[in-house]
Amino acid sequence: MDIARSEDPDLSIPAACRVCEARHGVVCGALTAAQLRELCKHSMRRKIDAGCEIVAQGEEVSSYSNIMNGVVKLCKVMPDGRQQIVGLQFAPDFIGRPFVPESTLSAEAATPTEICVFPRRLLDRMITDTPELQHNLHAQALKELDAAREWMLTLGRRTAQEKVASLLYLVATHAEPETTSSAAFDLPLSRSEIADFLGLTIETVSRQMTKLRKQGVIQIENSRHITVPDMDELERLVTA
Image (tube, rainbow, N blue to C red):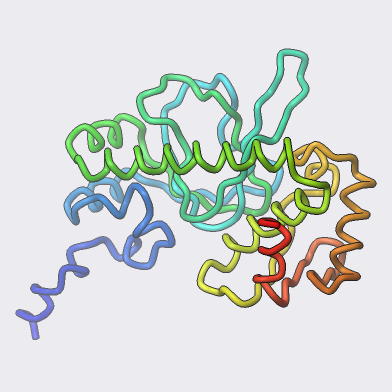
């Protein structure tokens, strides 16, 4: 029995990591068991209330984070104080830009969120020493670039209904990634935040949500809980 246990590779991984949502994410999925043990030793889990800032724009970067659960909104703050939501992140996304001394965006919990925080210097060293981690972070950067270009198309060319459907599809596919036929989730953004994110008015967002509900594409409960009975139908609206 002891021999069998010693041959089980999972037993060399910290218990907290074995059940972690981000275990096979961009960062931790590329690390050896020894590296995971070292990272776990210096990491700390934090629970963040909705509306609380995780990273401030212009702040010196001393740590990175993995999202364990919840939704994080990325914002760009203008010199006059106005801000624009420029992206959403979900578990098990990585928060941070390696080797950049200051944060170029602010990150705020859009919902109650739990993150795993680890020192910047430790991960920067692991990135230098681990080609697979370098590859994963590069692949994530390219994926985010593709997503940003797709969102530019959404904002510039899609109709109001397609814009709202695109946001709902984005959240739905991350809320229940294992489910392809249907999904249920709480909207991580208020109507005014959705309007800002999509470049629409609050009234237009409300009208389009009502229209989608009447068409049977979505069901709405308590204004923020959304059920999508047929994901294929929602996807058709996005890609029409």
